[in-house]
Length: 263
Ligand code: PEP
Ligand code: MN
Image 1: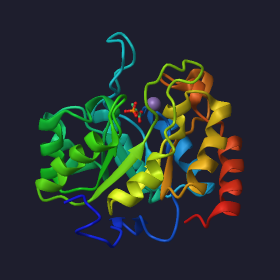
Image 2: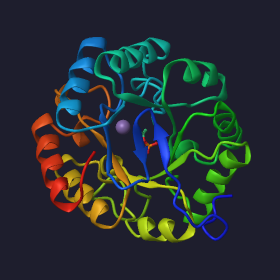
Image 3: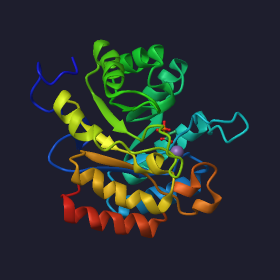
């Protein structure tokens, strides 16, 4: 179902009046996690002002350590709903268990499957049944073929609204958090009709490396970006070191206009 051979026309995924995979770039921005109401709304207003068309923020955080901030759960989803009501931005958040499916239906516009869950097949089937657009991140050590088979799980449940997201893979290189595999963009474009966006934040883990990799992703033909932005990255409860300051995000959005038209 994901193959481009049987479905040559690129798929365009609609989220409200935003289209992903069409002529225009889509930039999704926001904090790693939803931390509190005021800060989340502040970040949402900021990224919207600079041209983001969807908002990201995790309420269920898949952290490496059980002692790290785990997210606000349903309280976080309520804050995301408020973001949508106030700013009009559709919201993207991660699902970490099939038991959260009803909450996702109720509160969010795009359901994210994180890198660590790319081969959680029961989770893939459950997001297939939710029927909302799915942002499917590439696993930390997944081949492109494995990643596409995970997308196939979602489509095989009757949900063809899948957006692929390259977010870097684990290699021997430790200077950056992961190694951004930009080759994935043209390869995915050849193999499947599904749109692909890039997450330069998790791919690099280093704030200064985010904008160059974001620009390169668009030059390589990605349909959009998902970027972590925080008004006070030093105080962020997760992924502060890779979160852009609002001024950096603003500058990046200006630079992207030069490469391609942004929504
Ligand atoms: C995230 O988007 O905050 C996240 C945890 O990403 P990934 O699953 O790519 O590590
Ligand atoms: Mn993060």
